Length: 158
Image (cartoon, rainbow, N blue to C red; front, side, top):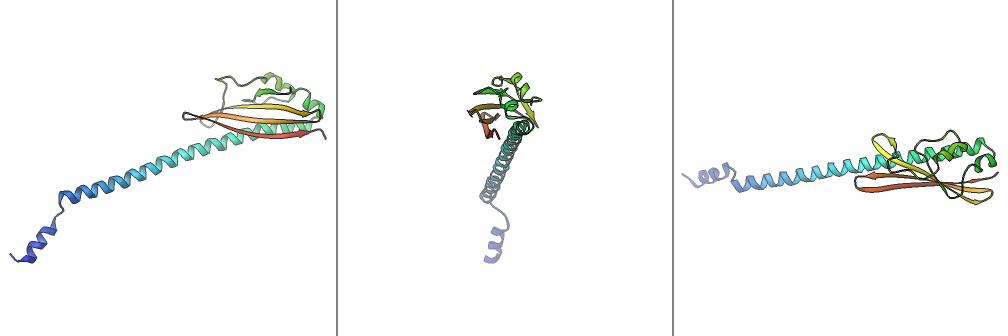
C-alpha cells in the first residue's frame, strides 16, 4: 500500500478521544443554554411579581386619592388615626369604614393576584392638622426571600 492510502485510512474514522471531546463540548454548551433559560424564567417570574405588587400598591393609593377628592378634608382625615397601620388586602368602601381594617395584616391574611400572595398595608402619618402622608407597603415571598415595595403620597387640606 502506498503512503497516501495509509494516510487516508487513518483519517477515515474518528478516534474515541475525538468523540469524547465532541460530546464534552456539546454537553458544556447545552448546560450553559439550560442555565440561561432557567435564569431567564426566574427573572421573568420576579419581574411579574414586582409588576403585580406595584399595580396593587397603586390601586390602594388610588383608593385614598379618590376618597380625598370626593370628601372634605375633615371627612377624609378624621376617620384616620395618626401612626395607624391598616390591612388593605381588600379595599374598604370608604375611608370612614377603613377602621374595620385597623391593624397590621395577620400571617395568613393575603391578597391574591395571579398566582402570587401579597400583604398590602397602609400606614397613615399626620404631618400636621392640614397634611398627612399615606404609605402603601406590599410584602410577598419570592422563593425563600421576603420582598417588599413601598409607595407614598402626601395629602393636603386645600
